[in-house]
Length: 205
Image 1 (spheres, rainbow, N blue to C red):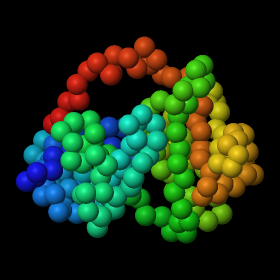
Image 2 (image 1 turned 90 degrees about the vertical axis):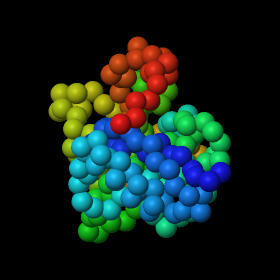
Image 3 (image 1 turned 60 degrees about the vertical axis):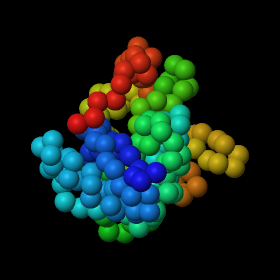
Image 4 (image 1 turned 30 degrees about the vertical axis):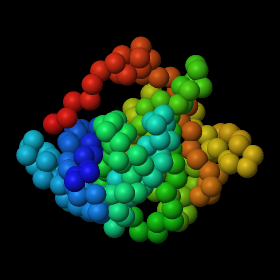
């Protein structure tokens, strides 16, 4: 194809989707070109993004796993299924990267419904800093997602190992490794909307 069409969905620091735009770039372009094109489209709909570094995230088809992370120099051809005609397969989540001192690594965080055990919502990456304990990590998650204290007390925060897969509560004195994930177990805020969302189209600004 002469151009690659990508739906760029902008998420704010609280992992909430703000708007989405459709951009077109050359097949040989890099993701920096995608970000710049998206910035222009966002400005056209009156959205001024905060200054800083940005990255793109492609989710797995289920929407509950992060498949790829792009920071700018990668070729657009790295986007899985980029040469298909299916817009949902061409979606890229764009978010700001908050540079922290003493940064160690990003840890994958996901929501899980307490009734069904199924993941839901938007997974995200959380920066782990030198000296972080379970207490600090949990406070950072609550502040990032802007969860009221009363609601937060109903959440269970666990860390999930990979070999073998094992989930256990994240204690205040715990640390976390790069190989682990964080599970946020709580009730789905709007469980009846899950099916309805799949029937609705994505509004593009």
